[in-house]
Image (cartoon, rainbow, N blue to C red):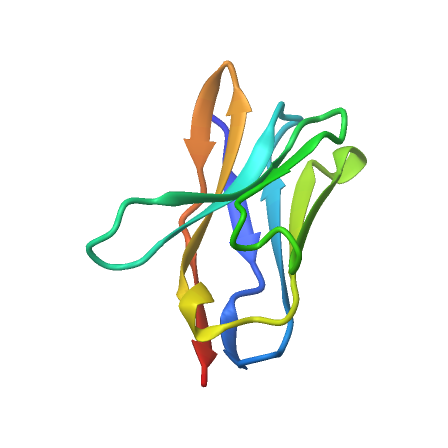
Length: 111
């Protein structure tokens, strides 16, 4: 059983920065971040393959950076210039044969 442990959520003012971390209990393939607000479908934020190829949602491309440390089985999401519309629960997802999800961490951006 693979475990994903997330950290780094919280409350920040608009324009501020936060960094999320997600550590897996083993090496994984593609890892990424998704987010969800009440009543809406969970949406892609960013993904990174184990070779370092990244993919971003258009809404975050210029502000967020995804990276990973394969030696630590960890994926990061550096979020800059945060906006109130970034407020959501952020989930880590990682794939090894099947997909695994983290427990989610709340990000709240105040205006």
